[in-house]
View 1 (cartoon, rainbow, N blue to C red):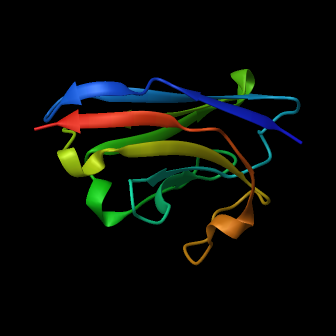
View 2 (cartoon, helix red, strand yellow):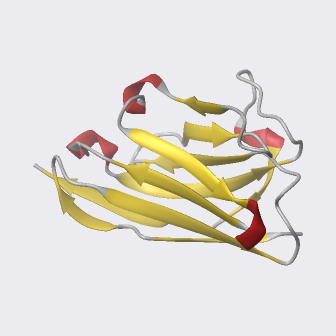
Length: 126
């Protein structure tokens, strides 16, 4: 079982930027699609972004397209989420997740991700 640990969250003003990092340990994640999810208070966990095992394709929820960028460094077992032009509605706990397969599918659900981190809080003030 891979262990995932997120970092990089914090408090930022609207319009600002943050970069989240996800460090994997225990085994390599180079053969897994990876994703970021988020959960705001009182809301369900929602998909944010995903990247295939080799980085050839990335996927984003509509609300973050053009503002967020997911990337990965397989050599160092890391996944990143660069977040720009942050908005108060981006406030949430952000989770890193490892997919059970190499490729992410647009119909996939959280159940397709077998490993999750503990999350990192992102708070965007207006």
